[in-house]
Length: 267
Image (cartoon, rainbow, N blue to C red; front, side, top):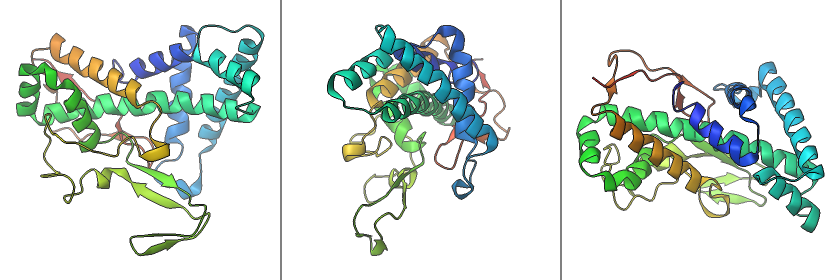
């Protein structure tokens, strides 16, 4: 995780935003602190460390937005600033919140995709061999990794009108927890849902959400995941867990599922 899955996505999203390479590590630390601060009890709210990380990140990005307003560059922050100024599409607070969201969503989730995907290949060596022999299956393998062990386990929806879901009434302003990971193992939709199959087709998982809330960064996450996984398979003739009996440690919040570390062996 430290060598590949953690640094790669934050480098990509930071460069897209136009953040200095010298600040990539700090970006990742802020992201980790914000995500981990919720733990498994979302009702208690973020931890003091998470609040401090959020405030520091907002201050940093607010200054970056200010700089781009004065001197635009060829990056995503400048494009958003231009959209704000030319069409009044975003308020100042909305622009800042959107850039913060892009940073968090653009690195933490893809980190988990790479880690969870490599773990699945280690636990299913026959599928790893199948993928090596048929590299054209990389795109479908990424979709299966997203379905089988999704980086985002759940999301939240707040209805604006009275809603009934499966016989349960949800009042306007109420909170509905949507379990994406459970939907991805729905036996009425997926044949043999507990089976990891790199060639699964069709594979209509909901790991990126659906409808108007479909993940904005889905193409980027798929691309990064495919490049990372394919590069690992090309570089190492065999990938396995360094200690198959070791207990896996996970980090993140109730909504995210990602490994703290994943020690691999190529022998």
